[in-house]
Image 1 (cartoon, rainbow, N blue to C red):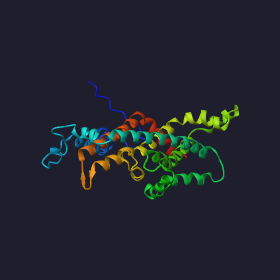
Image 2 (cartoon, one colour; image 1 turned 90 degrees about the vertical axis):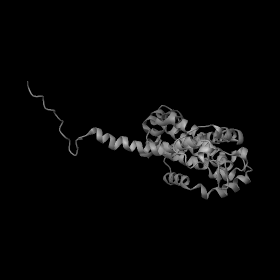
Image 3 (cartoon, one colour; image 1 turned 90 degrees about the horizontal axis):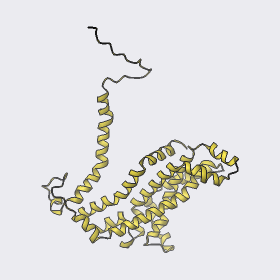
Image 4 (cartoon, rainbow, N blue to C red; image 1 turned 135 degrees about the vertical axis):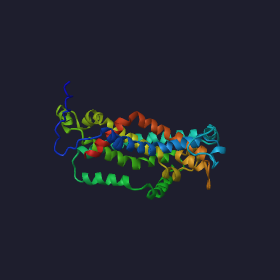
Length: 297
């Protein structure tokens, strides 16, 4: 019987290290880090879910394990819908987030295109100033914003939020779309303009269709910021019927130092569902839009 043939290995390239145990490396560099990431990402949602499903007798009993539900119940969800205005808060939040996102995209996309394509004096300074505007914390701006909304007679109304939210959404959308438009070859628009198309037509029919992933990612980000915003919603709106989910849940389900943990976690869980659904449908386009806009420009 002839001896088995020796295994042939490809020659190593300069600087290349051959793996001696690929399976161990997969566990060490992929499965274990991914497990930790999933634990920290999914853990809060799991905690909200089991807290929302626990009855009060189990929720406030220190002898019960906090990691599972022995007798699940929906009483906290019923309390949320029957004793609070959660449906109204959800409607208000959806309206504010949708309108604010539309305004941010309508203003931010052309502004980003102008910064990416048009060359004029001070363009770089304007681009930097727009991004710095986005970085200004809302904790410094909500006091003058309250005065402005009072003068416009929009205080204590969700329309105040629709007006205020684009002030921090438009700068980010502009900055993101400016970077994304720079990834699109200018030759495509130049050819269209040679054929007689105007600059506006080239933007509407050439650049914007090619920038759909970037526009989608900017829209998702703007929608998420609007949905989760708290400081402006807390200071500009006081009527319960005009509140959004982040403010309504906190204000109505807390009493001084006492928290209604069951309904509170139920409201937080249901409030995060729409955003999770949006991300699940558009996660690929969102990632590609963010990476393209961040690498170039």
